[in-house]
Length: 302
Image 1: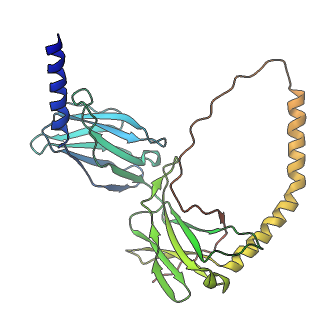
Image 2 (image 1 turned 45 degrees about the horizontal axis):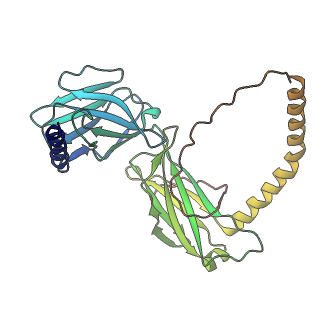
Image 3 (image 1 turned 60 degrees about the vertical axis):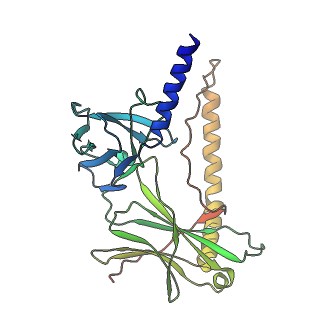
């Protein structure tokens, strides 16, 4: 009996060692589609396989099984398979893609055959029909009497754009530079967005320099911009106080009405607690408190 156990352990160790050299290449790394089109995601294992499994990454970070590609696989809803056994290539076809199909898809080997999971590098599918991006600039919120830090980080959020747009240009006066961009992420509604970070000296910010974040389209030369300055920050803060004082009585009246309705409907039956769903994780951005500001858009051909 002990010899059998030792034999099984040796076989498992051999399988684990042989799996270390397995590589799975997915292509392309990113796919842009408009609603209604068909997306094709390719998977190439480094070893001969007869089938692969496709997963879609959820907002929680977990992987959801969606389809298994093989030579004899049939279509399953909007998913179908195309397999080239000679080239050891497995393709996932997604027909009639919609915005909620946006996400990161992973190709993996069957868990019933291998001891440890094996996944590809992932393919990000972005589905959008937006004609131009949406831009907004965030600036750090700072108390009036507080001293400014040596540098001011500005964040430009660019959302819902296509691959034809370049979104990493910053302008400060006559200077134009490139910001530091993250890899982007897709939110729970299927909207793809990226952050562009620009750090400017506080002296320049105190001089009320107008900063703008610009996105440009490569084919038509169209451009859109969002602008912000220290003066804009002051004006928006004043507008917020006006809205606060004007809306406070209305908020109080609404709360009072809600309280009266709850008292009227009160009964002896106790409700059952419902667990909240896990919130969508946010990307890592600089640990600075930001306030959203209104901005001016302008369309100007190059």
